[in-house]
Structure formats: C-alpha cells, structure tokens
Image 1 (cartoon, rainbow, N blue to C red):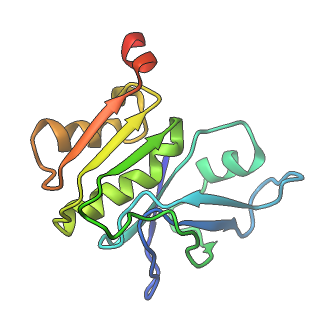
Image 2 (image 1 turned 60 degrees about the vertical axis):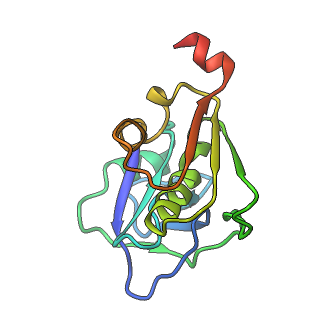
Length: 162
C-alpha cells in the first residue's frame, strides 16, 4: 500500500534514501512504538513524498491505513546512502525483493527526469505485474516513457510462476 504526503517546504533528499515517520497521536499503539522507517518512493523533483509498505496487522499500520486526510505526522530528515552511483559508464544493477523495489522507483523516476545516461538493470524477485507500483512500471516501460535505458527483469522463479 502506498501513502502520499505533502512534501514539507525545504525538505531535501536523494533518491534511494529513507525517513523515520512518526504518527503523532495514533488511536492505538504497541510495544514497537509510533515510528517506522520507510524508503521514499517519490523522486526529489516531485511535490509529494510517497512511501510504500507491505500491510501487516500491527497497531502502527492499522493506524496509518486509517489516518484522516490532513492529519499531521512527523517526518525526520532523509537518511542513507543507497543512491545511484555517479559513474554513468558503469551500468547499475539493482536487485529487489518484494517491497524492496520501493527505493528503485525513486531512483528510476529521477534518472528519467534528469535524462541520466546510466544504464539501469532492475532484477525483481516477483513478476513485475505483482510488484509495488506495478501499473506505473508497466506504463513507463510499455509506452516507452522512460528516456533512461532500464531493463526490468523478473527473477526466473517469478517469471515461471506468472
């Protein structure tokens, strides 16, 4: 499930980074607390922050799923260095499993936006049609709207299961 938030003024991040998101006054809580770390799925050029998660039956995720539109949450500064390398002559091989595809969505969207010369090879542990952002991946690859060369390859096991 994906969640979209207004990007705070002055909030800067790089593709592939993550944030700690805190629910301020959730209707329920558990021993894990009110904060979780999420990879940022949106790209820095976009006006919103998008996070995706596999929905499990926890107090935090139930509260997040049912949060009212306009409810304030705390989003800490972006962290991490899981970013696209600078050497465009060297192809980038991206390996994703399940919801782990989320930071790659940000990386590919920004690379495309910037017309980055990198060749990107994304290997998924699932068939693309069942991965996070499946419809967006399909639109961008089927209609050739990605200017950055991207090879989207489901794993052999995912391919044979689809």
